[in-house]
Image 1 (spheres, rainbow, N blue to C red):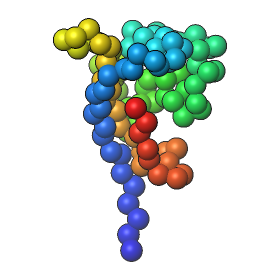
Image 2 (tube, one colour):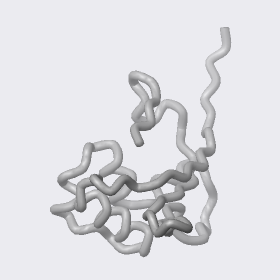
Image 3 (cartoon, helix red, strand yellow):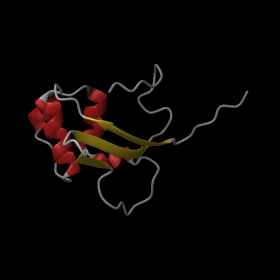
Length: 104
């Protein structure tokens, strides 16, 4: 048996639902603008996304500097709905004690 440690690369794009908590949207807007989110907004998040969104460079674990901008992008689709895209790498053992699940 071999145990291998990897750094998978994720590329995700999805719409932001209309009923998403405004705190989450404010944090994403700040991060996408390469600004530090308000501490009170970060405190409202689950600890795992809070860790990554407090400093977006943590999303690029295993990648070499210089980084070319924040990997989180906010845009609108052709119907005007807000959407988010994100590209990041992550150590397979990082914050994954029980496996991975994406909740959109």
